[in-house]
Length: 304
Image (cartoon, rainbow, N blue to C red; front, side, top):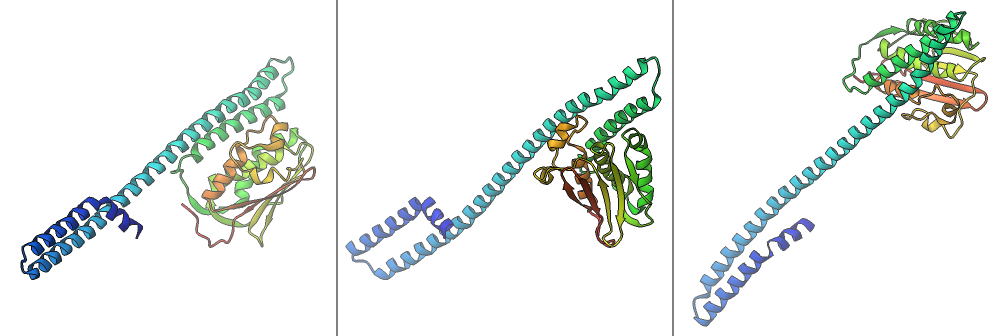
């Protein structure tokens, strides 16, 4: 109804001209005392043409309005896309500036250790590990940003994914005096082994980071088809938990630990989303945290 009124307003001058013409016709017929049957016939023809004109105008206006709305919608989407590209570019620049600053720390430490009279191989290996870890995280950050990131969904043995990660982190477990509890897992799940490995690695890395002198446990809950990574670290404040997976958010704990970039758990969440995996967190400040990687039912379809 509103659109019809808008059409009538838009075509008002033509409608007024038509009505005026009809009045003139009527006056001419009255003054000339002509047969009014012709007048009525003329009125009917004019009214029919007017109605057809209004109907055509209405549908043309509706089509024009729809095109304008679609154009405005596309323009808004284009603006939103441009803003997202700018935001992502800005964040990528900020991340790599921070990354350069972070990776300088183990490089400097390694150089100092090499220059010492007695070379501490274990300490150098630890710094080299951090360098490799930062490099891999940067590469993962770039890969996960690619919407066409490759996925190879197969049946994967969890144990074959977890053990290489533990071997990789062994030097950090030893140097940070962290006890590891892991008994092995026989179960298989349907997923991408490479991306799952990165996901688990990020969560284990987070557990190690805040559990110096503590304990990290890796437990598979078969009945829930869920992998729990539990630590006895400093825990996470309740107000930080809802934001802990946000990009660049490191919270209070991150400010205490200079090695925190606020990107590891964000990458874990993004990978989990691609693999249709749900991550849950339980934490008590001063007692530790438990991350649950819920694989869901084994017959659930994976998002490719």
